[in-house]
Amino acid sequence: MARSTILVTATRILLPLMLLFAFYIFVRGHNDPGGGFIGGLIVATAFSLYGIAHGMGAARKLLRLHSRTLIGIGLLCVITSGFLAPLVVGDLPFLTALWGTAVWPAIGKLSTPLLFDTGVFLGVVGVTSMIIFTLAEEG
Image (tube, rainbow, N blue to C red):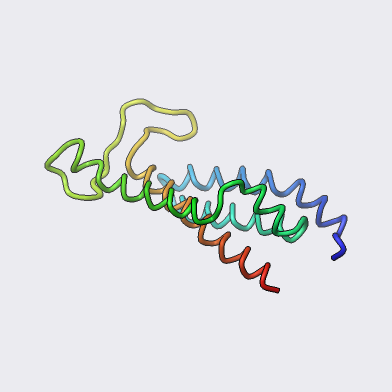
């Protein structure tokens, strides 16, 4: 299969920009619309573009973690964010939001909603990349 020089060059420029934009959407979405879901879709799209330009095997290597691993870590983050309030504070219901006191640059305060959003982000990257890689390798 012949590789397009234009697509390979464009991907070299677009991949870091798309990943940076996904991080911005992820962090911005904590207080505004956006967040983990759309950030995860942008990351999966970036790796799909890389896969089209360089082959799906190269895209899988660049992703480093297997899609199922990303899904599992994402689900663990979501479940953990739900159980932190009842386990740490005690008398609070499942999925009650908790916030830390320290403010982190670009992220703000660490919180259970941020952990939940991280889980959604990882789950969406895992599921979407699994679907795209599987469909691309079938053809």
